[in-house]
Length: 375
Ligand code: PLP
Image (cartoon, rainbow, N blue to C red):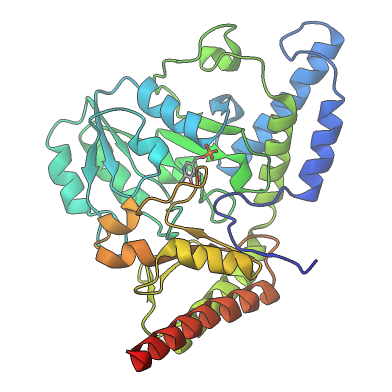
């Protein structure tokens, strides 16, 4: 079977081989990390080593890392557990931030998906002591990177806390909790070559956090439940690989830039969302005007190319992208696809995409012409 051009790494990136190997070893570890006997202590060592690795990736201390079942839980824990009543969220946040509580107020973004700092300042007002600001580092659909330092400066200036969803950014660009100055930061393993179903919330010193999973008091009473030892081990190994692998992204960025150049040259009517903003090296979000995103995704699938439409992160849902709508994309929002590259991507994958996508445009054009001639 021909190689499928897998270009949906922002949904899930393949597990790295070194991660799969260490997870297989972890499955053979006997014992509960909370047990005091030798087996338990060994299991505990595996967890703590993974914690150190995850912490190092984002410049945190190991004791600041709370392991969770993924990015969604980390976001919910941060927002619901931090004790702030007023929640301000950028309009382009992931659904797991937008839906964590009712009544969150949306901070507008510009046409490239970058937050409007003046609007944030107005919304914060003079007293932010009851407020949490949620600002993602990089967007899952467009890759646009937010000016976190500026956000933190404004929020902390009035006493607000800042939560940062770094699920898409971590491992692809340098992320340092201290340099960013954020109070809470979410991570997910399956976006960096680790397994699905495991992530972490990094909690700054002195930031209060009330657990919503209660029971045995694991994770320093911040998240009860026996730790997912194989998953956490895999997460730690993926974080380690990511920590040592930043230089590889420049080649991926060249492939992404080449893809965009070809698109501009051959499909001039296409729109590339967020192209003027600083972006992740991996992501491009494109529209083919007049052709629904789902039609493009299905045609590409038949041609052996895997991409997604809108923010298709959850099971097969196809809803118009709130991200692109917030950016003022209008009817183009329904005609967008996300092409996301990753550590397995090669030039032939991009070639395959271009051939299939431009081919689709040509076929649709020819069909339209034939219909017009027949009429
Ligand atoms: N935040 C962002 C920006 C994401 O892209 C995703 C998943 O796509 C999540 C959070 C949710 O992470 P998880 O799939 O680990 O629950």
